[in-house]
Amino acid sequence: MSMTLVKNEAFKPEQHSIEECLFELEKYGLPKVTKVDKKGWHSYINVFVTGQGVSFEVKSDFGMSTPKVAINQCYDRLIEAIKKIKET
Image (tube, rainbow, N blue to C red; front, side, top):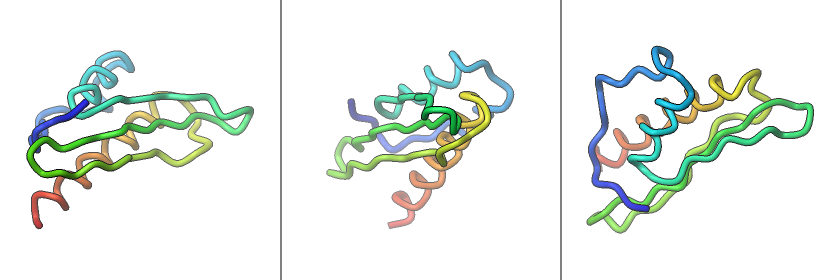
């Protein structure tokens, strides 16, 4: 999966369902949400930026209390990574 370097400034993950957040993350790559034993939830996304030759993975922390919290953190970190790429 690849994406162009565009971020959706209007999307606020905390205001959307898990499904809507996953569909938004899917625009950037392949999102995943996993339960890590009894330690909690984890989310990550593999991203390849078309035309930039850049690929990277963005992750939430391990042990998040809910899948939604993990997805929201992953999305926030994705947007920060996109900002850094655009600055270079």
